[in-house]
Image (cartoon, rainbow, N blue to C red; front, side, top):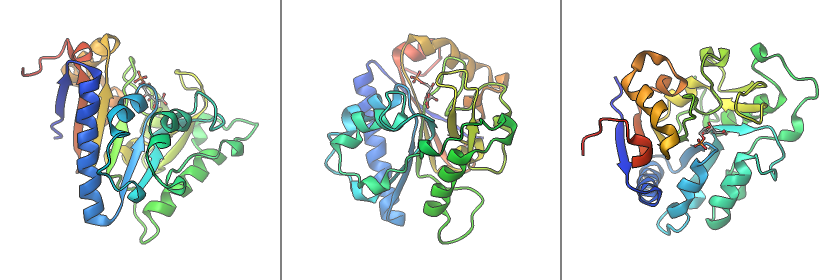
Length: 256
Ligand SMILES: O=C(O)[C@H](O)[C@@H](O)[C@H](O)[C@H](O)COP(=O)(O)O
């Protein structure tokens, strides 16, 4: 049973400082343990909350980072909908992560004829999965990559990454990266890490702010049987964190 470490902050600035503290700590520990820090970043509001304080940190060995995206929209990398584009603006442009260590999708591989969702594969997701294999499985064959940290958001419907309530992709047990062509959250075409990959991470941190997340957080924490994608995130051996602001956590019974 995973017991999440839940922290709620009066302001998003305080959340960003605490999140940057955790990232700094995990980066140092990971680099000390295995000479790199492998991290996956989600889109939405997360990149801004992540970068706000982290981009000023000087005590991080950025050249040891390997950055992936927990999900990514299949749009050009300079498009405002691209998670890479947003992360570049909020973090990558401010810190010296070697460009070759920031692993982006290749949207140009997107095929005209869209694969049927049940195939759950397409050129973009297959190529991105190969990038993960190159980084994580070069030495030995492994069933799933062990990310040092995955940074997740949560949608008002309880989705995370691009894994949405009731979607067949929630049942994927083997692939590391899959394609979704009917994302209820626009844009519709995306690639996403699968639940087994998320649940094999050493650390998973959800970040959620704003009163618009009150109800879904109440359901996630108070109604465990809802089977929401965010509730299916139960790291096998890893730690689970929730970084919230008080506006989002208002309906939770958190110890004061
Ligand atoms: O690419 C994406 O759309 C995100 O990865 C997505 O999963 C996001 O994390 C949630 O939708 C929450 O987004 P907000 O934090 O902006 O509400």
